[in-house]
Image 1 (tube, rainbow, N blue to C red):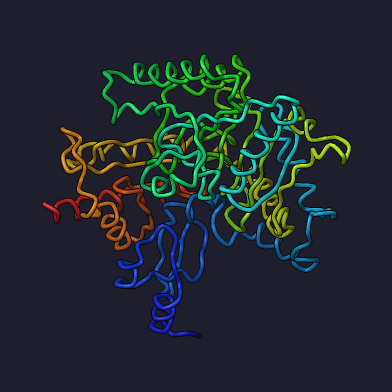
Image 2 (image 1 turned 180 degrees about the horizontal axis):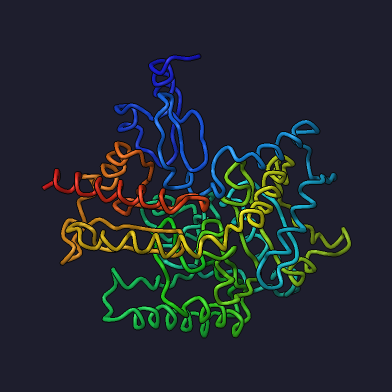
Length: 453
């Protein structure tokens, strides 16, 4: 067994971590997670921590879940991987059937990939090529609408659909142009009510559609919650109006359920809340229960059929990945979907979601908590230097990071987005663990903000 000191040295010497300022990282001692058990992460010293962010929003049923372990092991005893380019495999085929059974609306076909970014990239290319082939010989619908503060991944196409300057601005010269509408976020807006904030976004969308609908292929949106923007929750009725406008102006309604899918909002898919019917839907993260990289882009027969034709017509969707439909990942996903039924996961959330909401109420009394946003089991707690004037902390103070580091002393692992603390525990989390999680974060905020005075 490697010593902890050696692991730290190797990590600092060789690895480049994602979304991490490595100058800071190499001056800190990394926390090495060695194993997981239920809703807990266990480090190399044997210390246990509640996994407050589901290992970056992926874990659903807890770590080291027997049923998923056995499904992966059973498949591994057969074969670890085989290509889907010219071949088929059993787990990917069976999973496709299950995904369509539970998907919202008229989604009928599944295209696999391996991350949320690739699922969004595929949705983008599908939508673009669909209109090219549908509108021959004069294709015109080549533009897309996005939301400011949106996030759809890190590949260049998905970054073009994003709107978070911190992540995306530096790559602006690599990106294609889009039409952008404001996110209906009342807390940081100049409007006097949430309804007026929502109306402003809808009116902006209408104005773009009225002038440019003939050139717009589709609208990309994270349904109900913008995760990477800091858990921005949309006003009631907003998603339904957006979907309706897409129908009225004949543009594709494309939803990114990478973060919201598989139970995070209390429904299996967020779109179920208003019975929304997307033309294309991207899923990833929780699809495999948090075990293995897997993603899927689901679409309708209408879009799929536009790619059918003789070879001479060149209508094939020329896109794919080496590990598309990986049998191990698909086996994990099948086991995860079965656990939703076996554990009655969604039923039990109806108790946990209000308990989490009640547990968060005490945070409103903290001087440096400006806003608390919750949708199902997705939570953002925004820290402020002065909550009355909504004055943020200077970024260089890294208050959100300090709170997350302090939380480890309370056996809690969370990760911030700037100074927004993100809570998204596994759906298997118990009410007792929710209580311990929120209590640990509350105490950590108090400790850090008092120290910062």
